[in-house]
Image (cartoon, rainbow over the protein chains, first blue to last red):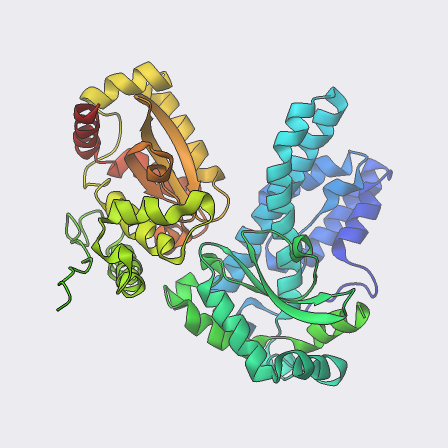
Length: 260
Length: 208
C-alpha cells in the first residue's frame, strides 16, 4: 500500500517540482511521482496536463489525484471495488482535469484583461474545484473495516455527537434521512460551526463545498448517483445504511479536533 | 360522500424494454421506468392525496407548485413524472440522425443547421452540472436548446418542449458509467424520435 511522504501531500510535492524548477528536474520528479502513483492508474489526459504544468510557473496547475489509503476492493461489501475504481479514476480525475483546464483558461483571461471570460469561468472553477475538494475529503473519510472503518468515534467527537444529537445512532438516522431526501445530486455532511463550536448536519447541492454554508467539513457522504448506482441502483437508502460500516471515524475526529 | 379522484398511473413505455438495445439497455429501462418513474408517481399520489392538488392535471400541478423556484414539495415528483414520460416518448428504435418534416426547416431557420443543433444540444447536455435535462423547445415560436436542473422543465417558463434527454446519472450509468458525452451522442445518433417531435410541433403550432 503506498503511503505519502510524512507530512506532505502529492500535490505539494508535485507543486514544488513544477514551480520554478528546471524542466529536467521537474520531468524526473514527475516521472518518479507518476511511478509511485502508477498502480492507481493515471489517465493520459492528466499526464499531458502535468507535462504542460511542469513548464508553467503557476503552482496552481499541480492539482493531482490523491492516492487512496486502501485498494479499490477493500471497502466491500459496503461499496464495490468497481464503483471505487470508477469514482476515483474517472469522476474525481475528471473534476481535477477540468479544474486545471478552467484555471489555465482563467490565467489566460486575466492576461487578456477579459472580464467577461473571467466571470464566465467561475461556474466551471467552482463546480470542478468543489468536486476535487469534496472527493479528497471523502476518500479519507472512508476506511476498510480492518483499518478501523466502522468503529464508532471516541473522545471529544463522541461526546460532542452525544451532546448535539443524543447518540451516534440518532446522528446516523438524521444523515441518512437527509441524504435520502436530497433531490438531484449532492452531499450530506457532518460539519462544524467553528464560531459556535457546534456540530451540524447539512446537505449541499452538486459540488458546492460545505464552506459555502459556513461549516467546516468533517464527514461527507457523496449521494450523487455515481457513488452508488452500479451496486444499489435506485435504492439509495441501502447505500446510506451500509456506508457506515466503512466510515473512518478516526479521520473525522482528527478534523474535528483540528478545528476546535 | 367524497368525490372519487383518479390517481396518476404509470404510463406504459411506448415500446418493449429491449427495443432500444444496444443503445439503451433493457436493464436501464427496467430500472428507469419500473423503479424511478414508478416511484415519482407513487410518491406524487401520496403527496397530493387529500389536498387541493388532487383534482388537477399533471401540468397544472407542476406550474402551480413551482413557486418561481421556491417549489412546494409536490413539484419534484410531479415534474419528474411528467419529464420521464416525455423522455421515454422522445425515443424510438432506429431513431436519431437528421430529421425530416417541419422540424427540419425550423432547425435550419432558428439553429442554423442540424450540425449546429447537435453541437448546441451536446453542449447543453454535457455542461448541465449535476442532475437535469437537455431540451429542444419552442420559445415565442422560435426553437431553442436549453438545459434545466433537477426536476425543472420548460413548462414552468411558459415554453413548449419538443424533445428531451435525461442527464440524471441514473439515465445512463448502467450503460455508459461516467461517459455522459458518449450517451448524448448515442441518443442523438440512434434514438431521437423525430416523428414524435414533429407531432409535438404540430400540436404546438396549432395552438398559436
